[in-house]
Image 1: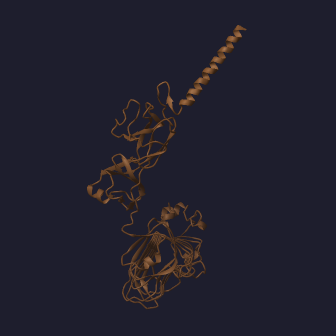
Image 2: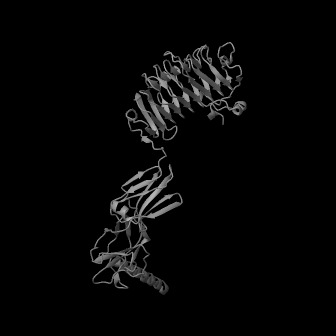
Image 3: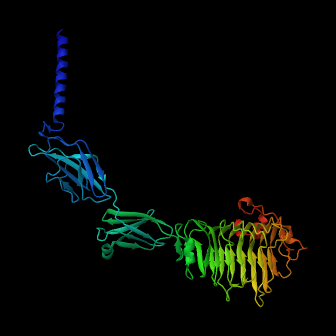
Amino acid sequence: MKKMKSIIGSVATFILAALSITSCVDKNDWEVDSSHDRLFSITKMSVSASTTDVEYTFTANPKADYYIIELSKDSLYDAIEMGEHASSLVYGEDKSITKSPVTLDNLDSDSKYYLRVKAMSANIESSNWSYLTDYFFNTRAEQIISNIIVGVNDVTIEWPAGSRATHITISNGPTTDSRDLTSEELAEGKATVTGLDSETTYTIKLLNGETTRGSRTFTTLMDLGGATPINPDDDIAAILAAAEEGDIYAIMPGTYVVDAKIELSKTISVRAAIPGQAVINGMSFNLKAGAGLELKDLTLDGTNATGQLINYPEEYATETAALVVSGCDIQNYESGFINQRVVIEVNSMNITGNLFNKIGGRFIDIQAGYAKTINLTNNTIANSISGDAIRIDNSAGFTGITSIITISNNTFYKVCNSAAGNRLIYTRLSGHSIKLSKNLVTNSIGIYSNQSSTNVTEMTNNYYHNAPNYYDASIRVSDANGTVLDPEFVNPDELDFTVQSNAIISAGVGDPRWLN
């Protein structure tokens, strides 16, 4: 019994002691630490940082009169006296911070700050310093760069004039360059960096010491060779119609719907800024008053176009400028490619490196005028030409002139295929010379020509497959020395004319793009 009473007594004593401790903690949790007669430290806090200030939230102590908060870019711990660091900012010494939350301002953006707080009272000793769980927080990067102007090899940034800043950095991957800002740049709020590479991504930063005040990532423009850019939202037809002599236009990537014939009286150049990434639907041209035109690296769809892609609508007494079409994908022009029905002399027609598909009518139809030179080189023409491919009818009766026509390294697939008499070449111009070399003609029932006045002066190294009339000796213009061989196209129905015949590859015959 004595032993049992002793155990019961011990348990009772333990319970009373525990209750006493619990009561003490509850009483002093938000008040004072009885063992030291001071305020308890702040135990719960959080921060929400912006660029130059932070909202600081903490659980207040009812016994505290006010709070002192210290921020510093240098580490804070108990051995550091308040305000010891040069970067320290002390808030609340004027006893103004009496509740939570509180906004702490005048901070630097994109910076790390350490934070500590203590509760203060006029009658009781202050609490110990309390620290954030992670000890520090980061302000967000500032963005005072108000505008950025990107060029091919340079960039200009703008920011509010007079803002605090010391230098700018520009980086491309691991490479970073830095330079100080001049007093003129700071006063104007504007700086330019030159010597950049075209079509390259950079990040430029505006800094004040180690603090980032603004940052922009950009990609320099492609080198347009001084061309004027046209964007998908622009009225391309109106811009080109109003062009001045010698203007060069770079069509930026995108799809453009024109569905109109553009009247040109000047010589201009229209190029894709990035080859193959500018798609123009329904565009055709009238070249008037001696105008010339260059079309380069464009994708042109004539589904809703008016007439041929290139038209010469009016007589012109002197020589016109050149026509150049290169590197283009051209399709669905039902009426044909080039139409010239008036008395006119064109300096030259250079048609090089294009892919034509579904071009109806005649390919080049010249009735009353002529071109001094026609160069048809390195092209693929597929599923096209329901009449004669190149016709020069000379209805105006030109004499004493010479037209040089060169047709070389082209791949023809299913051309002049609507009737057996369709001609690849036909001219009645008295002075002309036609050269045919290294062309690959396949899957065609057409012929070269049966016109007595058509004069072929050179015909060498041409190959044929499923095109027997081109080397039929009974037809007036035919290729007696041509080679018959299957090029073994990969997938011609999908316009993949990659040649698999080693003999044709070795001979370098046809459009070079398919010989690799």
